[in-house]
Image (cartoon, rainbow, N blue to C red; front, side):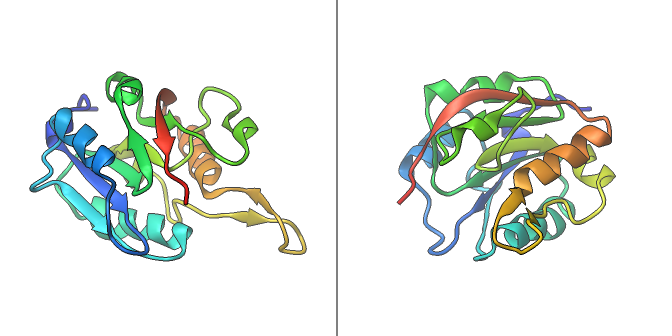
Length: 171
């Protein structure tokens, strides 16, 4: 596996509904050497599971890149997120405020607000990469799309780590 290098990674931002990015996100990416002129791609889809699966199928896998940074447009990393760039794992996520903080759980638990992974992970996992599981009556989410991906990656033998902290600009 090639080491992570921001200069040769692509950033894929989920930018629904208005395709607008937060200045703090762009500033952090630029500060760490990401090539924002050529390697910043956005996609826009209302359904988050469909958006993430399409980002893998339509943007990441057809590209020439080895590393992908996936980010939701409302994540705002700063200096506390810097460990995310140095962590040594196939998949790395950043912790950030969410409605149910207990869902962070064990150290391999990540959520898809800001995470990165190596091409080999996406190629090894069969689609769908992301899915939600619902209660028998469809009224409750019993497994989020993030944990679905994490379980598939762990089952395939990939290393997952969580490093760093970011703010979350929830409206």
